[in-house]
Amino acid sequence: MITAHVLVKNEGNFIWYSVMSVANFVDRLMLWDTGSTDNTLIITKEIKKQSVLGKKIFLHSLEFKKYDEQKARQMMLQETPDGWFIVVDGDEIWWDDSIKKVTDEIRNNGNNIESIVVPTINLVGDIFHYQEKEAGKYNLLGRKGHYNLRAVNKKIPGLKSLGEHGVWGWVDEDNKMIQERSVSKIKFLDAPYLHATHLKRAGEFQKDSEVLKRSSKLKHELGIEFPKDFYYPEVFFKSRPKIVPNVWENMNFIFKLRSFFETPLRKINRRYMPEKIGY
Image (cartoon, rainbow, N blue to C red; front, top):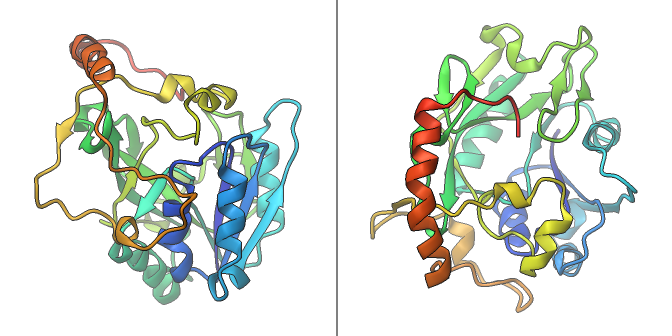
């Protein structure tokens, strides 16, 4: 059994693309909301209505006075059947080939490994630009850059959720982060996904500020332009409900002007300032 964990709040811009990019490849998809006030809930209900995919999608709402990622993720883990789960945030959009590589690896070799790491391509400014590799600070399997641990085997002894948002992670019975367990049990796959973490994610711009630490993720930065023949994830070209936003928009002049001044400072900080843990 492969379950997708999708935990969201105010992800109206990309949630449809995110869910629809993986739904056909997993057995079960847990789509849990933690208090969205934009159009996210309307969109997730539209997804649930689909005759075929809707049967494998399980909607749930959580209420927090103060967001508790450790608790929310642990609750999802406890509701997850045995097998594997893939963490899919509402701003992560997969290529068919990438998610298929991950699910095929789980189905063919899942008994021999514990987790899977993949590269990410981080959008910045708009959907037509991506962030330089020097901005990636994750250290996984001896690789430093834009990487993420995205698939986890529930058989890891004592597996649980630990830590607050920004420094949160999955740990084992000894509270060791699972990416620090035996490297022989961690599989790297060249199966990237697009990550829209630095773009506007809520259906309404002001709603991003309602999400913990979301404002700090929006980057005014001039990224690297994708080639004209860049192959975007297939889900962007699927027919979509009218409520789903069009993401094919360039950054506006004011955003670009501010980015022009901030980008050099960001590049200097990345190369010469001490690195922080988490965000």
